Image 1: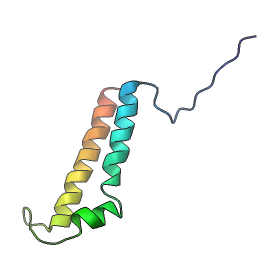
Image 2: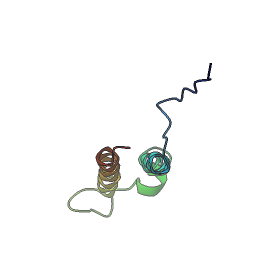
Image 3: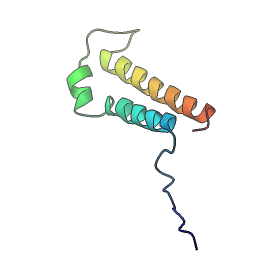
Length: 76
C-alpha cells in the first residue's frame, strides 16, 4: 500500500503562488500598525483632497485588490 501524502490546501503549491502569497502578506503589512504609524500617520500633505493617511491606505488597499484579482485570473 502506497503512502498518500496529503498536503494542506492553505500552502501555495507553485512558485508563482508563493510569490503572490508573500506579496500579499508584505503589502498587507504596510496597512497594519506599527508600519502605518511610522510611514503614513500624518495629515499633511493633502492628496486629491484627502489627508495623506487616507490616500496612502487607498493605494495600499488598491494594490491588495489588484493582487487578488491577478491571482484569481491566473487561477493560482
